[in-house]
Image (tube, rainbow, N blue to C red; front, top):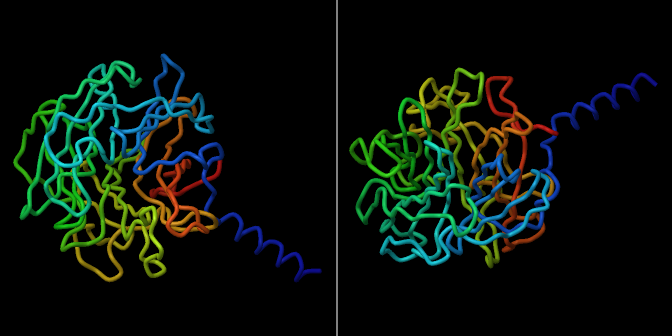
Length: 326
């Protein structure tokens, strides 16, 4: 009997440590690189995602139902680069009384890239004004001008970058005008490391800033194989005392340092029915008062499948972000 009770307690411990599944309601919503915000006047959540001029989905709850409601820039970006209709990796925020969305213009594997910005009074389709380019990159630069993330902390700071020599951050004097020289402060990655999608976030009540990023190889729709186990996309994090870093993983190494295994602490990896989660964004949900992470993932059984919207709560009580149940 005693052994049976011990086995039961161990089983409960394993269950308690298991990574929660994504919140229900978004498992059929096809997205990549989602970003989320809430419009309190409309009582609606907005999710923005890669492709089709930045896809828009809305819902009355984090559990849906989610409805496709158009695109941010259905007539393409004014930035004259390849990919200006197939926009990537949006980042949304509320700055100085308006909704502000940054987006990427590029093609796969290219450094001929730019980050643009658009504004809206409500986030709904038909209300967005494209302001055009903020920064750009070209072949030979140490950075790639994609995967934007804005944080307003003693002034606006724009993080960006993918592969090449890593992720960087520059100051902005307003939502479009650069206030410091490129490439700016080196935040993470380097030497061609498979790391991208940096997102700087400060939870309420925490003394720390956290730099989330996607590490590893992201599966693309239509592929017929997967990378070696453990090298697929996953969400890693470092923390620091400033929005400009330096950011360190739990082992104490800066995210810019070269180590094996690579720097950064795991937040979310493949588990259960979720394969290769990444393309993440963080958000303080004003309805629940909780920290929320959105991301995309591939279903574990669907090699070469599409990617779907994942939503989870985060808890920072331990000093590090942990994915938690409702």
